[in-house]
Length: 465
Image (cartoon, rainbow, N blue to C red; front, side, top):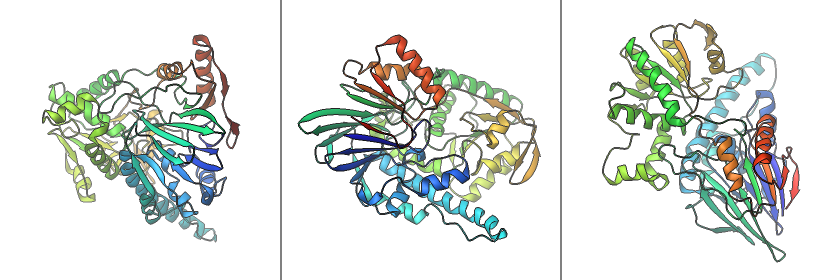
């Protein structure tokens, strides 16, 4: 069996790993590489293998850095099944359509510049219609239900606890009379978070392919993070302002909504409107409601007892149309507006920032990771003048940074993940992590257990297992 890492190698984007066994090929995830515009298009456009030769894909979860290049794979000749959980199939469908629209909008912008330079127009990586054409290839399975995607290989998906439908991929292989188990972690979630169950730890694994995104970080609990967020809300309400929250549409928005509903229910926060203004977040919340099989016991009990889950408390408002979004501008009472994108680089959040950044009563609450060069990072760094839609604005609103809402496992849980299968582990393969995180994680692992051979592969590197 040969494993080749084509993405998220010594980085945290573009996850794509190929298994070649018994003369067949299986691809685990097919994510978009995300970075500087001039680099990303070329990397994503050209696959380092012929998509037509793939037998199948197994998808860990719907985040775009894991699923986002599937339409391009199909566009280039792949027509096999894409195996994944029921919830991920539904969520990936709406996320890929959204990604297709973004690809088309980006190319329209780029082509205006190219036309002025006398250059021919560029083509989108894929269109919304090409994303729609990917959905019929999804093959949905339940957690813990073994299936055989190619001869001699049995795959089982275990709950990763990261976002709804997220899974670790357990691959049991029989090759030339020998049995082996490879476990791909996908993105590992956190213990005791709202709505979703805890991640399942690996068991009896020979080869562990795992993420190490936060291998150098120990998170505060989400409850501690929300206490900080609650303090931001309370002081903003006191001065009569609005709390503007750039938030990732999937996972972050639902967790924050849950905590807010609980706090309002307990009387810890006044019953002010909580407005979720992001088409993708609204659709994602619908997917959460539909897939109650992914809920933890606490949330499931709320439903069984006919209590309203905190995604649907009395004060929450989900906008659907552009007119509803625009109407928020005429609301002058204290409220909380949660909108995408999480790094404030596009989407409706830009309109809310534009309309509220100049009022000192308001607060911009940054709860997501802010990459360099984004508007969110410039606000995080305390810049007092920022450009939104090409226009310069003076910031008078407070900017509050709240850490701890990440849906990724921290160093402590990553260590426990390896320890869970240390008795059988022959090789540890680390991906989806920058070099500093990987080194800090390995340094701690070496102090707590006898590590087997460890690999930190480069992009395109193959490993015989």
